[in-house]
Image (cartoon, rainbow, N blue to C red; front, side, top):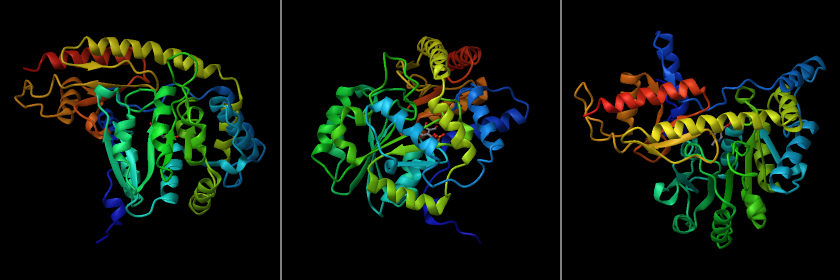
Length: 400
Ligand code: PLP
């Protein structure tokens, strides 16, 4: 019998990928599902980006590129990062891959030895702990509840660091909570890190453009340029430019680290699709009005979702400052009984109940390491959001 490697048996399939598959299955069975699980923009990729890809195909840009991408993409990335952080990285400090997801995975593969610890504040993006496990590392999950704004505090960071700590993973704006670290919060974390020079920081800023506050989010490297030699800043075009299917992500960081990632990448994929590279370069350098229009649409949807959910008895959520998710506390539903006589023991039970009884699909907080919550995505139409809130409200009122 086939036996997968232990690095596979010790991890789970991505909960969000699974949820999406389940929704597709139910829809295929003819059920009409109000889908609030989707982790991608519902907008189409901008036309000028598509045209750049068409032009690249017509011009024969259909061959392998350098591991670190075409000169056009590299310069687009460096300009974009400079606009976002004020820091001019050099071409030897870039790595690219088939999505930010692959960038993060490969960075961990390139840097972790067995037993190296990676600090992951919870709630976390579902993939971080499993990616660490798949690469023989040890995830050190630090619960960051609502009482601390779902953010890692300097005290909790200091307590989690050991001599074996290799990485801290930060995610701002956060999936699943939408919280954004302020400059002073990042500075305070940096002060702790100053005392632990062995700790690298992977800052996942893939939602940086999707921000509802004034101006721009503060990147970790902008708040703490002194950490530049140990920060890997991860980003990509998926979320800002509605390009999830093009699979193009990137990171900038210290040359020795990036060189090791690129060495590995040379043995993994050689390079991401040349056509996606051309599209990504066009997205990063072209007209940015698409991004602003999306953010305005997300803002309207966020406001509707948050107001609607907070009006439901037993539910509460913070107003997300970025990304397109809300993390909803459902402690008020736990312990209650469904009309069928089943007890809601935790957020997973609640999410299954919502799917069965109300045909609403959301993702349980346990997938993100902190319950009892569920995550909704508001990267969907206002009609879907309103229908979802209404159905959730009805389902909750049916509990006793
Ligand atoms: N990081 C976070 C926090 C995400 O939510 C996602 C996508 O869901 C990714 C990274 C991966 O994005 P990409 O499409 O670039 O692989």
